[in-house]
Amino acid sequence: PALAGKGRVLPAQGGQLQNTATITGTNLQTGLNIVSNTASVTCIVATSVLAATKTDGAGVSTYTPGAQVVYTITVSNPAGPSAANPSIVSDPKPSPITTWQWECLSQTGTASGCSPTVGFVGTDFTNSVNLPVGGVITYRVTANTDPAATAALVNTVTVTPPQGTS
Image (tube, rainbow, N blue to C red; front, side, top):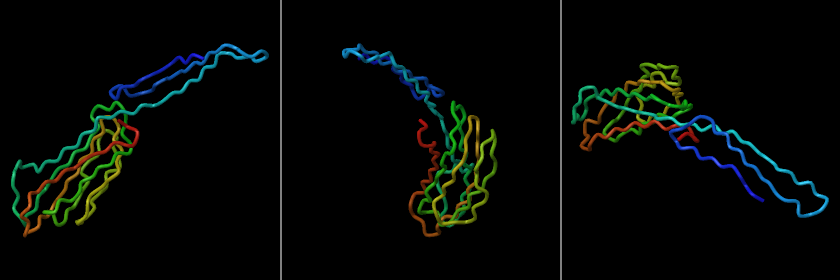
Protein backbone atom coordinates (compact mmCIF):
# COMPACT_ATOMS: atom_id res chain seq x y z
CA PRO A 1 0.00 0.00 0.00
CA ALA A 2 1.03 3.62 -0.56
CA LEU A 3 0.72 6.34 2.10
CA ALA A 4 0.08 9.89 0.90
CA GLY A 5 -0.28 13.09 2.94
CA LYS A 6 2.08 14.82 5.33
CA GLY A 7 2.31 18.16 7.02
CA ARG A 8 4.80 20.18 8.99
CA VAL A 9 4.10 23.35 10.94
CA LEU A 10 6.87 25.70 11.93
CA PRO A 11 6.50 27.46 15.32
CA ALA A 12 5.97 30.91 13.76
CA GLN A 13 2.96 29.73 11.77
CA GLY A 14 0.42 28.81 14.45
CA GLY A 15 -3.29 28.40 13.79
CA GLN A 16 -5.01 25.32 12.35
CA LEU A 17 -3.32 22.51 10.48
CA GLN A 18 -5.38 20.19 8.31
CA ASN A 19 -3.54 16.90 7.81
CA THR A 20 -4.97 14.25 5.47
CA ALA A 21 -3.60 10.74 4.97
CA THR A 22 -4.77 8.45 2.16
CA ILE A 23 -4.15 4.70 1.99
CA THR A 24 -4.67 2.84 -1.27
CA GLY A 25 -4.08 -0.80 -2.05
CA THR A 26 -4.67 -3.61 -4.47
CA ASN A 27 -6.94 -6.53 -3.70
CA LEU A 28 -4.66 -9.55 -3.65
CA GLN A 29 -7.27 -11.86 -2.20
CA THR A 30 -10.45 -12.67 -4.06
CA GLY A 31 -13.68 -11.75 -2.46
CA LEU A 32 -12.34 -8.69 -0.58
CA ASN A 33 -13.47 -5.24 -1.53
CA ILE A 34 -10.57 -2.89 -0.73
CA VAL A 35 -11.22 0.75 -1.50
CA SER A 36 -9.19 3.87 -0.98
CA ASN A 37 -9.51 5.22 2.54
CA THR A 38 -8.89 8.76 3.72
CA ALA A 39 -8.51 10.04 7.27
CA SER A 40 -8.32 13.72 8.16
CA VAL A 41 -7.18 15.36 11.40
CA THR A 42 -7.29 19.04 12.32
CA CYS A 43 -4.69 20.13 14.86
CA ILE A 44 -4.56 23.49 16.58
CA VAL A 45 -0.98 24.75 16.76
CA ALA A 46 -0.60 27.37 19.47
CA THR A 47 2.32 29.77 19.18
CA SER A 48 3.00 32.77 21.40
CA VAL A 49 5.89 35.16 21.79
CA LEU A 50 5.85 36.06 25.47
CA ALA A 51 7.90 38.81 27.10
CA ALA A 52 8.84 39.59 30.70
CA THR A 53 10.70 42.68 31.87
CA LYS A 54 11.78 43.75 35.33
CA THR A 55 13.16 47.17 36.20
CA ASP A 56 13.92 49.05 39.38
CA GLY A 57 13.02 52.28 37.63
CA ALA A 58 16.21 53.96 38.80
CA GLY A 59 18.71 52.02 36.69
CA VAL A 60 20.97 51.45 39.68
CA SER A 61 23.54 48.68 39.58
CA THR A 62 23.99 48.32 43.36
CA TYR A 63 21.72 48.01 46.38
CA THR A 64 22.11 48.97 50.00
CA PRO A 65 21.69 46.06 52.45
CA GLY A 66 18.66 46.69 54.68
CA ALA A 67 17.06 49.04 52.16
CA GLN A 68 13.92 48.57 50.14
CA VAL A 69 14.01 47.96 46.37
CA VAL A 70 10.92 48.52 44.21
CA TYR A 71 10.59 46.70 40.88
CA THR A 72 8.07 47.00 38.07
CA ILE A 73 7.36 43.69 36.31
CA THR A 74 5.63 43.61 32.92
CA VAL A 75 4.58 40.35 31.26
CA SER A 76 2.96 40.34 27.83
CA ASN A 77 1.98 38.45 24.72
CA PRO A 78 2.59 41.31 22.27
CA ALA A 79 2.22 39.55 18.92
CA GLY A 80 0.80 36.07 19.55
CA PRO A 81 -0.34 34.81 17.14
CA SER A 82 -2.08 32.62 19.76
CA ALA A 83 -3.34 33.35 23.26
CA ALA A 84 -1.19 31.93 26.06
CA ASN A 85 -3.79 30.72 28.56
CA PRO A 86 -2.77 29.96 31.25
CA SER A 87 0.82 31.20 31.47
CA ILE A 88 2.87 31.02 34.64
CA VAL A 89 4.66 34.10 35.98
CA SER A 90 7.34 33.09 38.45
CA ASP A 91 10.10 34.76 40.39
CA PRO A 92 12.27 32.80 42.84
CA LYS A 93 13.11 35.01 45.84
CA PRO A 94 16.85 35.80 45.83
CA SER A 95 18.71 35.30 49.11
CA PRO A 96 19.47 39.04 49.74
CA ILE A 97 15.69 39.69 49.86
CA THR A 98 14.08 38.86 53.20
CA THR A 99 10.45 39.67 52.36
CA TRP A 100 8.61 41.11 49.39
CA GLN A 101 5.14 42.21 48.39
CA TRP A 102 3.72 41.53 44.93
CA GLU A 103 0.94 43.85 43.83
CA CYS A 104 -1.10 43.76 40.61
CA LEU A 105 -1.06 47.24 39.05
CA SER A 106 -2.92 46.61 35.81
CA GLN A 107 -4.29 44.09 33.30
CA THR A 108 -4.84 45.36 29.75
CA GLY A 109 -5.82 43.83 26.42
CA THR A 110 -8.23 41.41 28.20
CA ALA A 111 -5.36 39.85 30.17
CA SER A 112 -6.57 38.31 33.44
CA GLY A 113 -5.56 36.35 36.52
CA CYS A 114 -3.20 38.89 38.01
CA SER A 115 -3.15 38.29 41.75
CA PRO A 116 -3.95 41.26 43.97
CA THR A 117 -1.60 42.27 46.75
CA VAL A 118 -0.06 39.15 48.19
CA GLY A 119 1.32 40.82 51.32
CA PHE A 120 4.87 40.68 52.55
CA VAL A 121 6.08 37.12 52.18
CA GLY A 122 9.39 35.34 52.32
CA THR A 123 8.72 32.79 49.58
CA ASP A 124 8.99 32.48 45.82
CA PHE A 125 6.28 34.13 43.73
CA THR A 126 4.10 32.24 41.21
CA ASN A 127 0.94 33.45 39.46
CA SER A 128 -1.19 31.75 36.79
CA VAL A 129 -2.42 34.34 34.27
CA ASN A 130 -4.19 34.52 30.91
CA LEU A 131 -2.33 36.41 28.19
CA PRO A 132 -4.37 36.84 25.02
CA VAL A 133 -2.68 38.39 21.99
CA GLY A 134 -1.90 41.99 22.99
CA GLY A 135 -2.45 41.22 26.69
CA VAL A 136 -0.23 42.96 29.25
CA ILE A 137 -0.02 42.52 33.02
CA THR A 138 1.98 44.85 35.26
CA TYR A 139 3.06 44.13 38.84
CA ARG A 140 4.89 46.19 41.44
CA VAL A 141 7.24 44.32 43.75
CA THR A 142 8.43 45.96 46.95
CA ALA A 143 11.40 43.99 48.28
CA ASN A 144 13.12 44.34 51.65
CA THR A 145 16.79 43.43 51.58
CA ASP A 146 18.65 41.71 54.37
CA PRO A 147 20.70 44.21 56.45
CA ALA A 148 23.52 41.64 56.64
CA ALA A 149 23.45 40.80 52.90
CA THR A 150 26.77 40.57 51.08
CA ALA A 151 25.72 38.55 48.01
CA ALA A 152 24.87 40.02 44.63
CA LEU A 153 21.17 40.71 44.15
CA VAL A 154 20.15 38.82 41.01
CA ASN A 155 16.39 38.85 40.60
CA THR A 156 14.88 37.21 37.50
CA VAL A 157 11.22 36.89 36.55
CA THR A 158 10.01 34.43 33.90
CA VAL A 159 6.75 33.84 32.05
CA THR A 160 6.14 30.30 30.81
CA PRO A 161 3.54 29.50 28.14
CA PRO A 162 0.99 26.72 28.63
CA GLN A 163 2.00 23.15 27.86
CA GLY A 164 1.79 22.46 24.14
CA THR A 165 2.46 26.07 23.14
CA SER A 166 5.69 26.80 21.38
